[in-house]
Length: 203
Image (cartoon, rainbow, N blue to C red; front, side, top):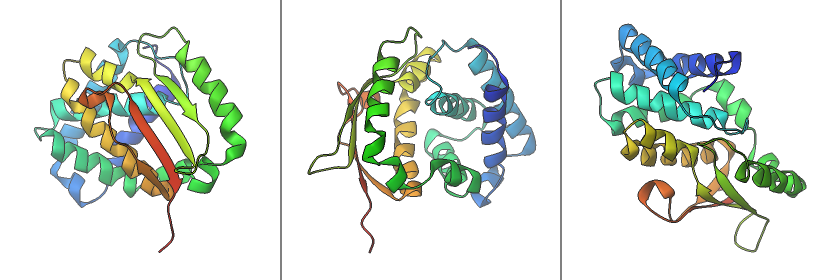
C-alpha cells in the first residue's frame, strides 16, 4: 500500500489512543513502539484498497494485527484495549458524529453512488457493498459481499482476527447513538454482512 501522510497519521492516531485509559497500561512503551513499527510494516506490504472512506477501517485492521503480533496478549484482550481506546477518545467521537446525521435520508443518493464506485474499483482488497434505503425495520442498511479487513487478515495469515474487528462496528454505532442489528458476517463464513442501522431509542 502506497505510503502517505494520511496513512502515517492514522497509524499514529491509534498508537496515541491506545496509550490512554487503565486497560492500556498493560502495554509498555516499548510494546507500543513495536506495535507501531509492525503496523507500518503491515501497511507497506498490504494490497491496495481504493476507497478513502474505508481507509481508516483498513488501517485499524492493520493496527489490530500488529497488536496481536507484538503485545503478548490474546485477541480478546487486544480487542478490549482497542475498543476502550475508541470509546474514550474525544477526537474519534467527534469524527463519528451523530446517528441522525449518519442515517439521514438526504445522504442515500451519495451512498448509492459510493457503493457503485467501490464495488467496481480495481484494488485487490476492496469492499463490495449494496446500500439499502430506509424501510419499516431500519433507517439504513448495508449488505457487504466483500470485506477489505477480512482480506487483509487472511493475507497476514491471521484470518481469525477479523471477527474481533467486526465487533467494533457495534462500538462505533453506540458512539454515534445508533443501534446496529446484524445477523451474519463474512468473517464468520457467511455469504455477506447484513448491517441494519436505526437511531437508538432514548430511554
